[in-house]
Image 1: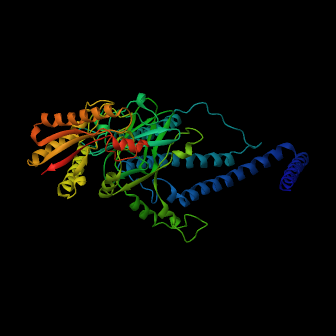
Image 2: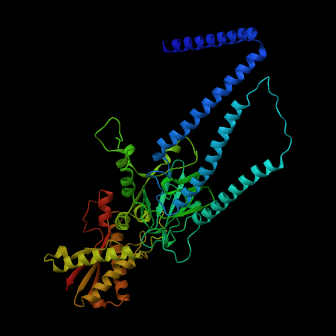
Image 3: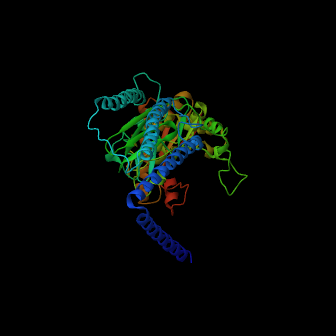
Length: 498
């Protein structure tokens, strides 16, 4: 029914247009073609003036009405230190071009009215006017010179890189269809080396795990930055052209595959401060959800955001990411809770190139645990609670040869033996029940002897220790399951005297 009504309206409009044309033809014949043409010209000139007035009023009124939504006006002053320079440049450009726009529109429509065609007036032809050409060449050139010089000055300020000795924080934004990987430095405040050849499902940005600076780097699902801190953002892409755009901070930089770029800026308004600015304006005191008039208002829902300003594909919309600007103390508390990508995703896997070494934080944490367990064993009254299992002492498969990383936990025992000179121990080796019992017995004795020899080599008297192998005779787990067999394959020590 709706389609039929639409078709009928179109047909009626066509009939009206045709009839108006016939009436115009009839009037032309009655009045004469020249007289009718003069009337049409004057009428078109008059309506041109009406259009000009309505058009310029609409442009002006709409600009004033919506100004509090525009970046750079009302509550949307730049939230970064350099942003004010960009806003100022845009406003001067708007003023210069806007002034010319209004003057040219007025002249265009006034001339169309004032010099509308008439059979009583003959057009004058002016072939050349040096003075006029000088004026309309010199004035735009002078205005453009000021705008260009101002633009270059702003560019040099905005695009300046970090200088040696500057206090700053660097993060990395890696774009792909369709999302961002945001990488932060850890406590060393340095981003590690990355290489596109290392990118894989387990290594989304191609970090080189042999570079120690990468070990404490972490990936974040949102961008959290401290207010007042200078931020340098490394920007790159894994596939197509993207754009790192933070509109409220006047930050915009292309993410180009194979060509790393950067942007440096300093946030000067926290998210809460920006919300408070918005709350002072009536248009932001409206419900954020029209269906819930008693819910949060627009200013309460405001968030800074990262957007991709390139049409990078049909999933372009999903490139949006929340940005939070917080006080320094809040940022530090947030950063401390983030987990290193290496330790959470790579450590101890087949992709870990550092399996033969421990990192300082691991040594500190594991030594504290070892010492706490040792203290508990020393004060225990029952014999079974005086037994401590080595959690990180391992051997090569089917061998009694210690792996390089075993030295760290055995080093804790060396320190303990030196700290408690009256303590004596038994080092015991155990296996699961897979294989020949005699072979298991030999293997367990060899592993216990390897630990014994390591301790002697580190200066612990042999008289304070003994080594024993028990093969598969003392299981602590179910040998019918893999987990149980893993528990049975162990090396431990028992406190004999202390």
